[in-house]
Amino acid sequence: MKCQSKPKRVGTLVRHMKGRKIDIGFFAKSEDGSLLILSLMLFLLMAMMGGLAVDLMRFEQRRTDMQQTLDRSVLAAASISQELDPEDVVNDYFAKAGLSDNLDWVNVSSGLNFRAVTAAASSTLSPFFMNMIGIDDIEVGTGSGAEQRITNVEVSMVLDISGSMQNTPSRIINLKAAAKEFVDTVLSSDEEDRISISLVPYNGQVNLGPNLFSKYTQSYTHNFPNSYCMDLPTSTFNTESVPRNSARPQAGFFDSYSSASTSSSYQSPQSPYYVSPNYVNVWCQPNLNNIVRPLQNNIGLLQGYIEGLSAVGATSIDLGMKWGLNLLSPDTASVVSGLVSDGIVPSQFNGRPFDYTRPDSMKVIVLMTDGEHFAAEELNDAYRTGNSPIYRSKGDGRVSIYHNRSGTNYDYYRPDNNSWNLAPYSNTSAGYERLTWPDVWASYRMKWVAWQLYARPLGSSQYNTMMNAFRSQTPTNEMDNRLQDVCNLAKNKGVIVYGIAFEAPYDGQTQIRNCATSTSHYFDVSGVDISTAFRSIANNISQLKLTQ
Image (tube, rainbow, N blue to C red):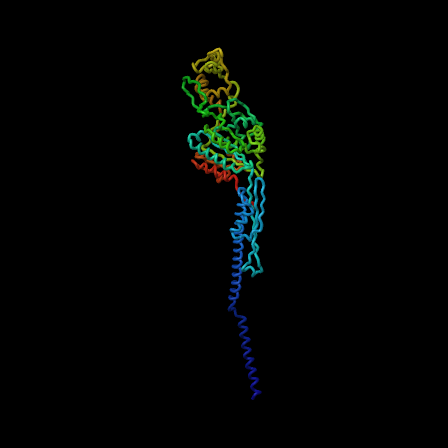
């Protein structure tokens, strides 16, 4: 019985194992549960990426904190007006930020006209998650540097002193206050004579003054007192300087604007219109208070010059800008050297204007107007110098003029009695004198000469003929073009041009805005806001900059 039961149990076990074999094959072929494995892998990957992001955010936050603290601290430490030790300033910033342990080093270098501060900081972060990929530490390092350099600054203040500045009296008053404050702001902290300011007042012309005028070669000269202007041809506006040795005409002293009677009757001679202290309608104003003051740095003197300015005349912005740039051009260095020898320019400015490319030199023009161009006038060459056909009695001052008439010897016309004579009139034994053209223009208005001495004896059409013969006009659109030519020359040479339109009309605003270095260098102001414009410009001339 026992022997028979054993085979039965073995058979049962075999049949059971065969069933198990079938179950294992089925399990191997089944796809149930495969997404669970993928999900686990994705979860681990997402957790790792999130951890990396956290670690990177901590890294960037620490780097930003250190960088911002470095930038602020070195800027403050580099300020030359800062009386504390520069290294202590940086340390203090880091202490207040709670980053003292992260400051590695501070380096300070300084000289006569500069201070430079550089610093570096670092930190080591222990990552929360990056150690999962074998990164145990993250090094955070940053550096910064700042420098303030008292550069050699050359400034030309080109100021409109035309009649409209006086017609609205508050304009000239506000300009003087603003310009004097500008001078004080720019120069008060300059203890090393690094900043020069040239004052260039302009109206219808620019009066150079006797010393600056003498450094240039002139043609068609005259001797009217205190009249030191030059007529510049359009070609001159294509270069930044005024050549010393190329002869330029001395601007004539003449009044072509003031009216004179054009009736058929005689009118007594009318001299150029004068209201003390100015010849109101003369192009080159013979007023020594309004002359150019080249390269000065004495606050009191400059403020006195500004206070003494007298507003009168037309508006030639192009000429003001031209002479303002000329006083920044290195080609003018020989002129400045001569003015130093004359005692006009301080000796410390010998060698200026510097080259445009000099790295520690900055050139600035502040161009201001309250108006727009007014068609400029110049004497034509034939009427600048030499003898005129006009004679004056030495006794009573009555005049005669010679006209070569055919068929008669009575060629001398007397306007006072409308008569033709054989010789110039004289009522005394002293006789008469022949006037030069400069004598004529110094004594009589151009319109009086054209009417009384030409139109009355020769016909009314001679009035316009002679006015056009006596003088030429430059149209305002050509003056606009000349101004922009000079502005572009200045900007291309690296000169910083600030423009101030002070209660100016539309065209004046347009010209000044287009002249400025950028829209941020342009100010459209009225009233006392002109002081704000000058103050902003003064504060911008010396500024800090990050060097790293």
